[in-house]
Amino acid sequence: RILITGASGQIGTELTALCRKTYGVDNVIATNVKAGINESVENDGIFYSMDVRDGNRIYELVNSHQIDTIINLAALLSAVGEKNPELLWEVNMHGLYNCLEVAKDTGAMVFTPSSIAAFGPSTPKMQTPQVTIQRPETIYGVSKVAGELLCDYYHKKFNVDTRGVRYPGLVSYKAMPGGGTTDYAVMIFYEALKHNAYTCYLSSDIKMDMMYMPDALSAILSLCEADGGKLRHRNAYNITAMSITPDDLAASIQKHLPDFRLSYDIDPIREAIARSWPDQLDDHFAREDWHWAPSYDLEAMTEDMLHQLRLKLGIA
Ligand code: VAH
Image: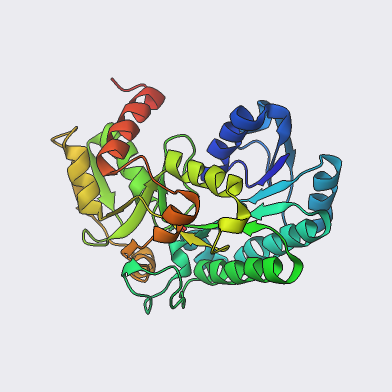
């Protein structure tokens, strides 16, 4: 059985539904620090409100539900974390520590995502290697590097089966993003359909790795189902699907909405964070070790996002 933390977040909402469909509703225990966030997560299967800072509670649920896989998504993201570094450290680090401690005692696997935010300004920007300099300058990035190292430590020292990927920015239409630096890549679609215009808080030339949510979800299932003996890395594999700028995204939208206009009103904080991240990752280890292969490129993502959001927003 699978325990998901942060199940009502941008990734968690869709991962919970996919795991319930793939593995059976009764084999997925969804948890989130707060209830009342997402109807389907809370009503379409087993749900508990749970704070990952409460290690005993995690232990209780893992034991009582015979959990063999913990997917730990509970986290504060980059932009919101800069406003509350203490809370981020408690949730992102102590929450992960609690999951690893429970896994050490119960034998459960722990999947927890890292991010391109685990890299910093001194990291090579293009074809960013799997193993390279990691000196991030956000508390979120620090928690991601520390989390990667903590997971590798638990794997090496206590033989805990830890696995993870470094996510790029994630684009999706079901749940809203959680206060990251890449949220523009989601909001632009909502604004394009509602107002045929969007004012972006990042500069037009900021190139970052991005990925459509269906690919992000299949990466979790593929990596968790992979033969552990074939994994040359644990935390965390570089994965990417596209490397784009806000201008690239606007041009792709304009193929469907010719009059869409993108303007800029730079947010210096999120601009500085985005500029500190790589432009394009090298993800060949993931492609070789567990057959990572994204299905959506920019054009396919744009087409599906606009189609799905038209349905969601009731726009013709
Ligand atoms: C953020 N969406 O913006 C997250 C992600 C690569 C960025 O980690 O903080």
